[in-house]
Image (cartoon, rainbow, N blue to C red; front, side, top):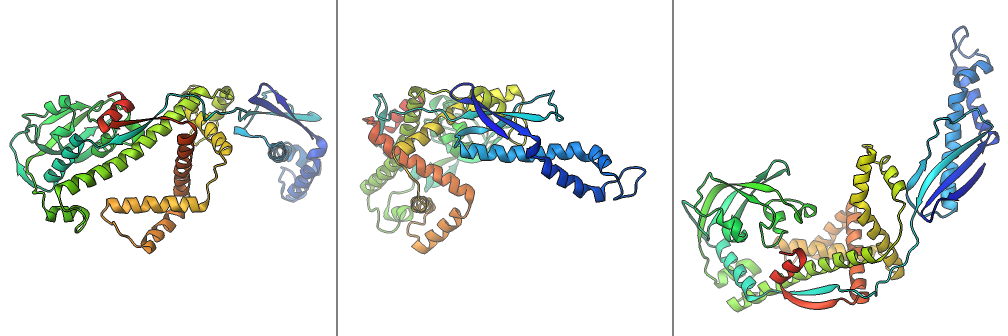
Length: 440
């Protein structure tokens, strides 16, 4: 057998395999001999069919099966021996006039290669690392929300600007159907004004675009996924099921202990300090996520390399349970190209910065995530035994391991980007951060 690579360009090649009779004749003869006792041909008793008739009836199919086995194995070994870094998997070139009776059988496979490129993590850029602070307006608003949440609900006949509404958001096309309680003041002013004067049973139609100050609130109130949050622009109906005003709860030690545990908060000043601390910790995570996305966009824009685009479009038509048309593959490639480019850049950045993920890294990250999640549900002091039991169960799930590993990689890369990219630091309020993030 002869195997060679024929380059089309830097990222596209063809593997050409020439198979001769000696490569498969022994296995074909063996299969024919095994078939003879079982062969049935009209006019002959089972097991008494002459060999030439068995070959005539079954030989072509057996030959094709055995040649395919030879070719598949040789292709796999060749890719390994050549240490080819492939995108997708080899695609057999179709040949409608293929001659199975030829002395030499030639098979061709298209392959797409990972491009060679360099990245400059220290290139000049205009990336900003935001330090998001909780200002007095945000803190005072959160204090009021706490007082309303733990205060006494007072039923109202119609909606006013301070009302709390219980109702259902719905949009059949997007599968939105979520019952929630929300304050009129949570909406932007234009949307909130639509509710003023409405009664129980009324249906108010609002647009999701700019419905809230922070698009992420769509996840809380409409239960849409994070992938759908930004750019979602559809109309949703809100059916009003209850209208309540609120008698604000008194800010006393009983409320403080209920919220944070006995003795941890003892005054309004302590409460505001706690709100500020918790809010800014959350904002720091959002700011890090924006920084990561901004660095991704910068690297994708400024790291130039070719992809085997046409090969990948053809390959996309062959993978998955549902085969794609050429048009569908074109759309899918356009949708996934940016992600693929960053995946390659990410791998290069990891190698360049010698980033490696160990099981201990994964375990520590998972432990911290579990503790944070438990704290959100009021379990502020779980035992190590409880936490590690949950961690062990989570890490026994391969899908969770994959998902968490990606988060660990992102976290490590973020630290590299902070150091290498040397972004400009800027302190902003949360409102200013939202405006910088989403142009709102």
